[in-house]
Image (cartoon, rainbow, N blue to C red; front, side, top):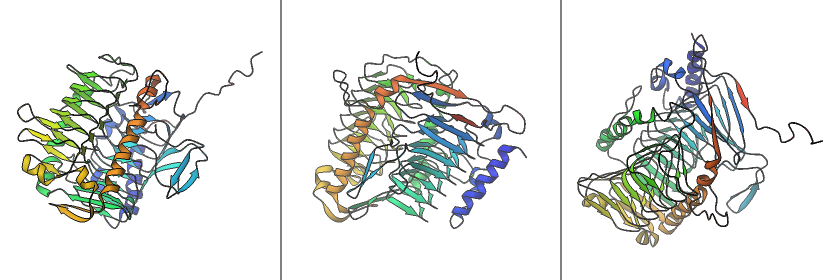
Length: 484
């Protein structure tokens, strides 16, 4: 038995100890990726002036995975994932919760142990006040295009296209295309296609996709790659990434204005343009796209035949096709916003498209400015059933149902929470950067001073597919001692 096989067995055992009341992860992952693939791709890490540097890799496979920030990976398999630590808390930061301010005593780091992450996005800092300095992912299996966002997860299974957002989760299963943002969760099975947002004592949003819709867009059978319209859309474009990853240093193919950042590991095709303060992350896909001032396209986003007017947020995995998004629109995690040349989409200023929303237009659609949209939408009737104006929602308090969406609590608190988060994303991404004063610098500006370094696995033998034990630390300022 190879060392890689032994590692896989160990991960299965440890994850199953946590998940024994819900699931056996073994059939999910044992034959999902051919073992020879684990030795075919390099891992790579970003080196910048702005992010604390410390990578520690031990007894792990890192094939095709990207790292930024402080990361410690042990006894894990990470395949074509993104471990992005550019918003980890820094030593001396003050973390506030429920009116209490807690000082961070050391730089936060991402700690991945005994886990299997397949094409998974890990981002942002944890909101767990009990573990401020450590963003832990342990005994966890996360499958295709899932997102672990600011969420410590211990003993969890994320099925394809699932998102765990700002939620400390323990011993949970998150079904395919489910989205959860509830703060804390333990010993819970979240059904596929459930979109659940809760802030204790303030509000709760709960929507369930119909099974027949899930079967068309994200169909998952244990032990196989997911199928369906969303998976087909992504897979049909994967070959466009091959030349992007064929060399370590790539040159960008379109003009990049001041204050903007275009990752060399993004695909850019056709007549595409970006404006000032735009952020385009690695593994983003732009084709015949126009991104206005301060807009962004995060990891695994697809902006195709579409225009974003400015200050638009497209969260991890969001897809916008044949659409015009007016200014200040938010398109959430793994949303599928799909128009056609015959049935284009118009999304008004200040709209919020909820995470995991599926809009697959069968007719031209225009979403009024300031509208919250969710669920599954094909036509104007669907839009009426799956949307509400933000002004109306802000005035609502109590309990209500819109089809299979249930809302309870304060609409004002819900709208204010989303608005605050969107502002934070824009600020963190540098959308408001002023080059004259240097104020408002964020990811778009800091990513311009980024170098990439590769790490290779063992190409053959009993360690084939594993990576050598490595520890990468910053150079010391006084390497040569004091000047004479």
